[in-house]
Image 1 (cartoon, helix red, strand yellow):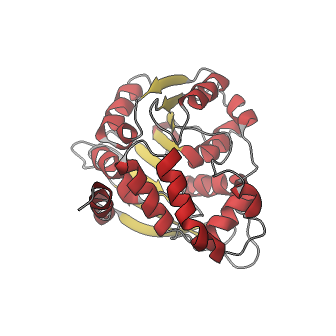
Image 2: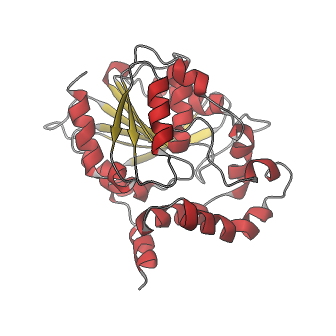
Length: 286
């Protein structure tokens, strides 16, 4: 079996999904957002909630190693955003902009009565737009916010942020080979990362992708990063990652007052138990 296919098959299995509780939270516009939650064992619980908002189209198995390490001592809250297959839109016209995505997270935190002084957030790539809005607008104040490969604008293939506004949904299916080629050629550091992106493409709901992408594709959050104050923020860069520029990560870390910068080297490392060990060390400074 080719390496790419073997990796893809392995990513179909998720122990965390089996261990977690799945539920839908109705937010203020009537839509329902899917979340996965777990409780840490009493004998090892550290008292903190670990909130993960994954990147664009990201699948749960892609975070398996990290989540199965975090489950040992954290309560976990995993939120699937509006471009995911799981999202249930409300009736009528709804907003899918960055502000709405951020409000979903804020409302879920409030719905679950999570103590923000005991909250650790992890966002990556696309979802860092959400945490920029939440922190920059003072909507939440976690004990620690970790941003992996942050962006100031949604990362898309060249020209797609323009033609998506007028082409029909089935055009996405026709152009999927181009997206796969773009991921393999320019945005993957190894077969594991490519396999994650491939499955995200295969499970994509073109209608939901377009609804969200059309509302966020021109949004820039540089000013929000600069407005983050009195928050413990750590930016994680990945020197070898083709999808997330290490230089951009450094620039965003420099824009956030008092943010720390760490380089994990590879995208794969940020999705493993090693990332949780780094977070445990960072928490000693809280």
